[in-house]
Length: 541
Image 1 (cartoon, rainbow, N blue to C red):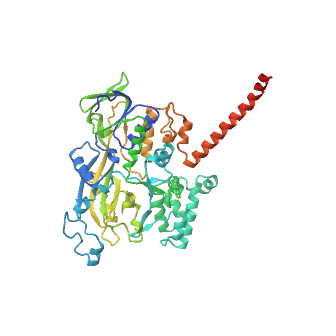
Image 2: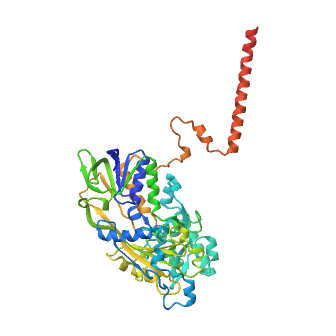
Image 3: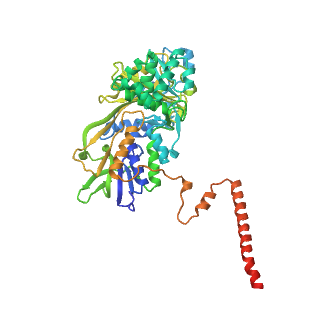
């Protein structure tokens, strides 16, 4: 750490995960001095993205250190390591010619073209994160892609869920009667919350959402589409919550594409870095690969200090951190928000050619366990997302952790997707790991705020609320992430804002502006001459 680094800050943030980066950016934006420090040599923590080589190394490192957020990691190749014939013995010559002969060596040569997310998310187009990115003007730091398809399973087959009105009428998966029933149902959901609608639906209050669907006499296929892919509910979900979720889906439709979801180009690891960029723009100082050896709290002085790399002391009024980056004495070993994760690399996409046309893009499938008690989210990515090399596909599978064996936790879902049917993706590589969060010690200080690890959720809603709650505890009278000005809106002391705005004009408009100013000057001179003429005549007389 540089010797000229300030020794005092308003806020020290340890860890560069999503909620920590949100708080750091919000504090820096309202004028607080922020030191953002991370023991890792990369941004994002358990929210980061890695190339394939780095990801494999991370799994090994996590297994060697129990304090890491990434644990129980392992990976396996399902193809020869080098040379040889990667096609299965049962494959026909035509299939062998069609399938590229992949080996582990060949895939690893493309390592840098992978961006493997530890914690992949899908954003609602009108969800909390998108609204926050727009209102804070952080959206200029990232690119997004609309989700291409939303899948659901029905009678052992994949169905593409129609989202827009045109999709409903063009789909071949629904009959004419089913199309009309679906459109009628979605129209009713869109008006939910209005007075007339409240009167008509009052009888369903206190009941479940599935009871309401059955009362609408929708077919089993529409029921599956709504429950699994549109509202994303379970059989226990209340009527009110189911309607709100459906309405959220519908409100996001058509905003950035035919589906209600978007995905960050180059992976979700870009999202925390967007907030880090804003923090740095407003004076935040960043230090990576710095070990936190001790955290000291002075309750009487209402200050906290950290010992960095065993020799540097830095003091602040508050600390915000992920629990994994605190000394062991300051955190409990009780797990929190643990997720079981699977990452698969395949040489083919979900479903048949028609379902994966145009390369598959980004697709979403929500899976339900055979007993109906658990669920998982599957995200398919192709090279169009900037996360996978051409001719390969990456699959992310996420569910809540039940044990320290993520492969066993995900087995009920992997069997549904990667079975031996003709439409199943051909797996080249698989990896499993656990994202583990820990609770802060019950006797912790109010000067130290711990962020929550990733939640099991499609979007970032709970994590954003976590960041908002922490910020409000620290700075109750300040606005959370007000809009940041664009570069052309910033006026440096001593500069002429008029001249600055002129620099943004096209050349033809600049020329017109100069002509107008020249004409105005001539008019001013003429007016002055007219005003001075009577005085000159009086002097002559």
